Length: 82
Image (cartoon, rainbow, N blue to C red; front, side, top):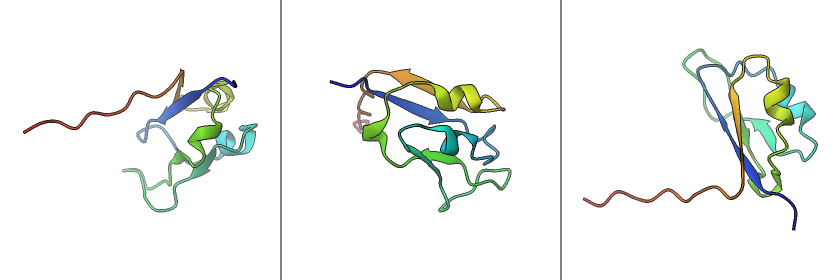
C-alpha cells in the first residue's frame, strides 16, 4: 500500500507561483481558480487528494513556506453538535 498524506495551504502566504503544481510528481495540485486569497491570488489546492503520498516536494519548493505536509490519513472533521 502506498504512503498517504495531505497538505494544507496557507492562503496568507500562497502567491500562486505554481512551483508546487509543476513539481508535484503525482499531479495532486492545481490553482483554485474559483476563489481568491485576500491578496488577490488563486491559491494552490489539492485536486487529487487520493494520490498524495506526503512526499513533501511541494513544501520544499514553495518559496513562501505556504504549504504544510502531513503523513497518514487525514482525520475526519466532526460536525459540532448544537
